[in-house]
Amino acid sequence: MQFKFFGVKFEFDYLFFCLIASYLFLDTTGLLIPLAISIAFHEMAHIVFLILFKSKITAVKLNVGAILVEHQEIVSKWKNIISLLSGPISNLILSGAFWLLNNEVYCAVNFVVGVYNLLPIKGLDGGSILETICNGYFSAKIIRMIVGFSTMIFCIFIVNFFLKYGTSFNYYSVLLWLLYIITPILLKKILKDS
Image: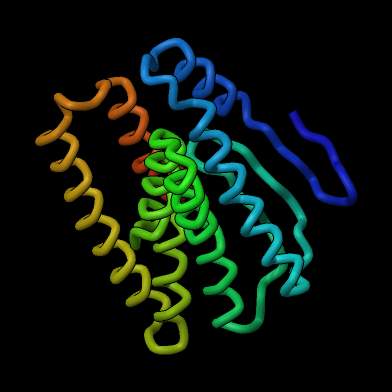
């Protein structure tokens, strides 16, 4: 499904709705609403900073692996980094606000989303920040190797964390988080190969 609003193309992938339906059906934690609000604020922070930096937003795509905000390239490396940091920082600020309001669920969800997106994993804000920092110092091939190695190390760490502490979590939630980690990487690989 797609439509245009104020010149910005919005695309919703069928599989995105399948993932939401699966989560509603399988998840017993009740975290879908706090997670949706957290992700919405995260993406809105990116959009606000893109607008502040006068980067024209061309499309917003919701697919299985991520919410992608396509925009014109920001010329300044530091503005790009600030724009990438705005999402995770907004989640950490919201986490603090919910902590002050004694709302543990919203506090924890925003904290996890903020910290998780700062990890230097390809497809996440942290991976894009790492690529941006390396750009200009290394060749594109070396940057891909650095980000790929970083992604592999952190994915192994996350999988080991869930295997070790998975009994304390709802297994369906753990499975969906692992899919959330792996899907952007696989999608980029598939798109690159096709």
